[in-house]
Length: 122
Image (cartoon, rainbow, N blue to C red; front, side, top):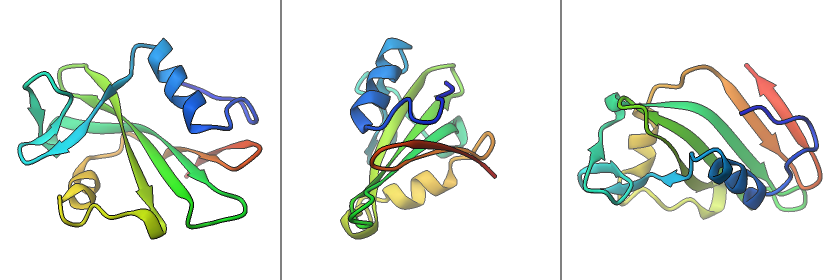
């Protein structure tokens, strides 16, 4: 899912692009692992992060969020959203530890600022 610089500048636009591509299954943290509401749960070993979109507020660095595009071992593709910085409060439910254990396919990150998008490959 390639995005040219300046093409998407909002979280809503990224989520809409995922919906159009039928990749809009939202992985949510549960006691059993990541689930999408269909009764199946995934462990970090059954998942891989295939892309990330990081949103940073130009005027308020604490206003930050990230969308992980995730593929399950059965081919299901979806996403998980997280706030980071001052608004990240997942410590109690284990989200941070869980997401860190998911392997990343490659370092392919989209950093999106208030008025432009920048592709980052590290």
